[in-house]
Length: 483
Image 1 (cartoon, rainbow, N blue to C red):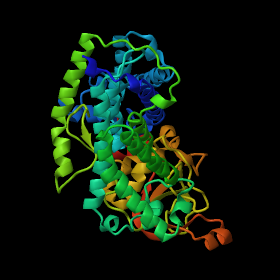
Image 2: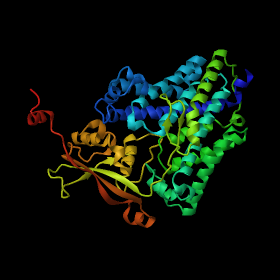
Image 3: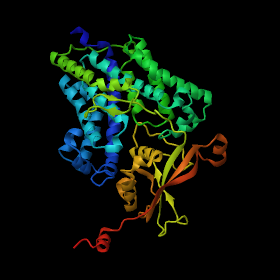
Image 4: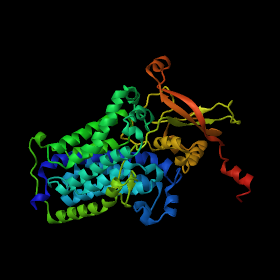
């Protein structure tokens, strides 16, 4: 079938797949380095407890067969190794079916991780990585020509990602329609970056332009992805520029970079290719598989497409347990005030206001007012992101904040590794408390006078002082348990 192959897009496929492999590497690395404290056997939300209370069909994956921290680590580090192999182009050295299996491996491994990740993996870019990774399996490798159908499915994914994000804004907070959301967003976003202070201080007319440009890029430009070249390439390039603006202004894990990868797959790189390789015609079995996968995606697209047209549009929702076709969106509402939960501990016996309270430092979220926000994306600091949600409402932290503070009181090493600063290196504190502060960016005059990027004001108590748990032997004596 001559229509099946798109020879001119071999470089587009190569750029997309290598970029995707780098994102896979970052995702697996974050999983390997953070899982013990978050979802390990002794973690804040242990995987074994999740597996006991949920059915297999709700979240199928490798860990339904067996779970241990050692096995999880093996899965995560295997994902890292496979990602490195894909970055190096090992898939191109294998026969077509071998390259497809190699691309299927990180998808299956990361799917298994997401299925047990609970609130720590409830972000839209997890499903986005899985959906893009699934399609990458069928893009072909090496000297096989990329299939037209999968290239169109990648455009359909990019369309839903951008158009869904645009619609949720238009239907959500009125500030998007008034073009005023960017007056607040750079300051109140989940995890500001090192340039966020400067973006926030841009003149208000520039913020209006930012908001208007966002609407154009997310509500109008996505339709151009389905037009002939070079219009489709121009539309994708505009999306890339918009995403780079977002990369510079904040930390959104790998969301922006994966969006860029999808946009790069749309661009026709033929004018830049000096000598395209000799591509072989696809075998019949491959054509059958791609057509079947395309039909599956079309069927599964019904509910996400209906969601786009619904007045009750939801964002970042998976409609199938394998995250094959999903709905996306971000920042349907914008916070006008930045609230931060500040966690403190004291070694004093009486946890009153006269006690020596010391603040725990987080790697990414604002804490010390003198500390310039850091750049971490595409790496994902899961605890820091959830702390932002906790400040919005205690309901977001109901399942995990208590276990988190318990581990601080025990001086749990895995939990402390997630933090940038442990104010009690000699041993855990006697008490932990958490308070909510209002953070705002200082103005240039305040910054020069105080050296502080943030000004913060106490708002309310988040968690009253809690005490260090008794050692097991003392607990047994005082409760009458044990032998």
